[in-house]
Amino acid sequence: MTKLDELYAKLTLPTKAKLALVVLDGVGDLATKDSGFLTPLEAAKTPNMDQLSRESIQGRMTPVAPGITPGSGPGHLALFGYDPIDTQVGRGVIEALGLGLELKSGDVAARANFCSLDAEGLVTDRRAGRIETEECERLCAMLSAKIKKVSDAEVIIQPGKGHRFVVIFRGKGLEGPLSDTDPQREGLPIADAAPVDASSKKAQKAAKLIKAFYEKALPIIKNERPANGFLMRGIAHQPNIPTFEERYQLKAACLAVYPMYKGLAQLVGMDKIEGPQSISEQFNRYLEEYDNYDFFFIHYKYTDMYGEDGNFEAKKKAIEELDEALPILLQKRPDVLAITGDHSTPCPMKGHSWHPQPVLLTSDVSGSDKLDRFTETGANIGSLGQLEAKFLMRHMQAHARMFDKFGA
Image 1 (cartoon, one colour):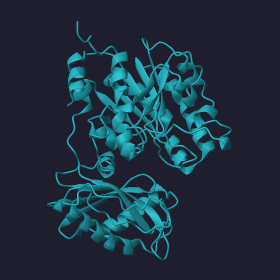
Image 2 (tube, helix red, strand yellow):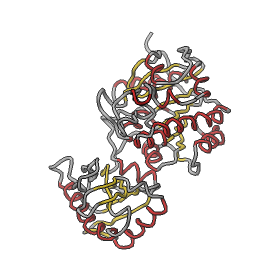
Image 3 (cartoon, helix red, strand yellow):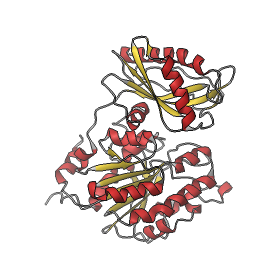
Image 4 (cartoon, helix red, strand yellow):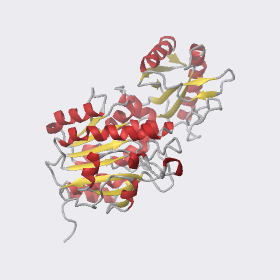
């Protein structure tokens, strides 16, 4: 705990306020000539967020540090108020927790996804055409039936959503982190996993296990189409970090569809609320759970997904879909509401970027920046200015009047 965290802890007051963080994953974008110098957020019709913006303040948030492009893990941990540099968590751990798997001490978890390989073993599609969940489940069942162990380690394979799944290696003398086997672009072979700390014998052993796992697994699915290969990312073991409730004295709940975001929430001690599959269902469940929690994390994936596809129109429509559902949440308007992204996923880049994401914050003491819309352009001149994402939670606490005065 830093001295600043210690100060916040000393100043924290109990509250009956309700706080909600709505995350449009990867919502930030770039205005380019090809899009008429509009971002999807600017092009979208968002009457409900427009109304909110008139009674809110806005700004831009640096997800990690200037110029650093975050993965979803660092992006969300920052939103939860954890320093994303000091608190590094492997994506495999997050995904495993999100799927409801219990990790034991010494387990190494990898987030995996099926891919397409050509005859030479080069990756032709890193996501295997985004196969359906049912196909992923079938392929995982094939692998699980034939691979129970690799060397002296137990292997646990759990399908996720779409083309994604998790692999856990359970044995003695293992640790991460390891480098990804995902080459990050098509036309390259599957990479070898290697210890980030080359001196770690436990990580060296884990790397050898993963190589042996590939040698067993690839022949099993070699004749499948389009998913005849797989890639691994975020290969790591679980760290020990303070819970959300310990940091903020807020009982928190997570409403997310995809396992990774449930895992991130579980990692910091939030309760996962299972069931909702659409943003309307998520907001309706928020209404049902309103009295049971102090803080709600509500995650919306599709802005990021379409940004990665470079699909401007689909990303715009995804924003409109969330906006259309927003009045459901506002039936029980939280005392403090923040709407933002965990990072930017610009359509022209087809991937995450370092560009600051826009943020809107409203409460009865937020005042107004007198902006008619929630957009990147408006956020540039908002009174929140440009802040580090890890301080958003402190702003939300302050707007919930959770801090005593500092000093005389």
